Length: 315
Image (cartoon, rainbow, N blue to C red; front, side, top):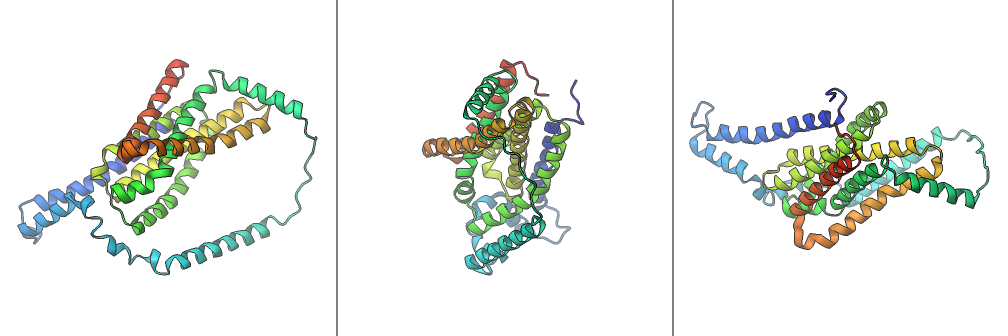
């Protein structure tokens, strides 16, 4: 039975859909306001038509307005000021950690290292990874990591070349996205601690893949808020998928925690690296939009195929 309240897929999807729809309603609502022949607000028909063209062709006018972002607060002190501020933050965090962690550590128990036992443990783990419980989880998560590699390599270039964003606007976007994603990730992790299930992995993959497709298809219509909502939702889906994978690996391989932890730690950067490598090979003839669209389709296909082949429920 589908539980509406306990579905992370429904929670993220409905919230993101409302925000995404609200951003488009804001744009098109403003367009309707401009198109309204009524002059009750004191605007002439000529001014309304000018505002309407500004909204409809805003993606094409970003380059012209990029000079305005050069006066933003980010560049008030230049690159030197940014690096100096980063250094101050680093020193402050180091000092804070030194103060908080200056207590003597507890002595660690050293049982020695046995190479033969470690080899046997890894053999057991790899045998377990081939089972129907973990293999579909790994495949789905790996497809999401490949997609993350696509974005890691070309998302910023997509914003610059495809959406004609200025360098300053991209930096503002990255800052805002990071600040907003921090509390969102904490809420999702807290939620996943209570509802650990393989369903979260598949649902997170579907969310990441779906919004990657939306980003590619809706490129001509995207504004700052649209891209922000899509990026946050896609990142939330990736977090749900990969966190669910880590939790299920530690749960199913609890007999060999050290070896399981090592495999899980290597798994994420390996998938992202392969994704960046593959995207570099295909970007020349696919382009940014098609890369994100086909990447999302691939993730959705893997998630649905794994759930079907291994008889696992998604919802």
